[in-house]
Image (cartoon, rainbow, N blue to C red):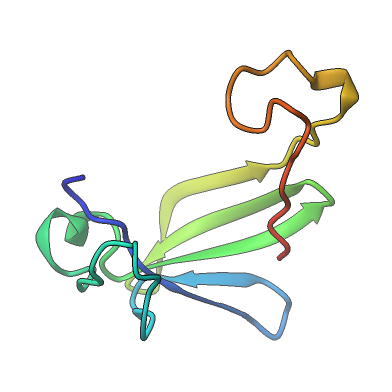
Length: 107
């Protein structure tokens, strides 16, 4: 990609919100992953530079979030919805996880 992977560091606030902070880069990466470059470099500066996402769980399978840039809220809201794949969905999905082996991101 043109923008790069957009590395970030995640942490929790005292209120229990998950913060995805693109202003802070991780100290290392997995060997197979692309080189860590600042989010201010290349075209990623238009997407990740100065950006922080705040996420809040609203139900077991739904997380909502909003992006901020330079401490100001952006007009960018999003929802992450986890659909549990079970016996009833086997064969209905042709993509990853079609065998009912859903994975959960714990936040």
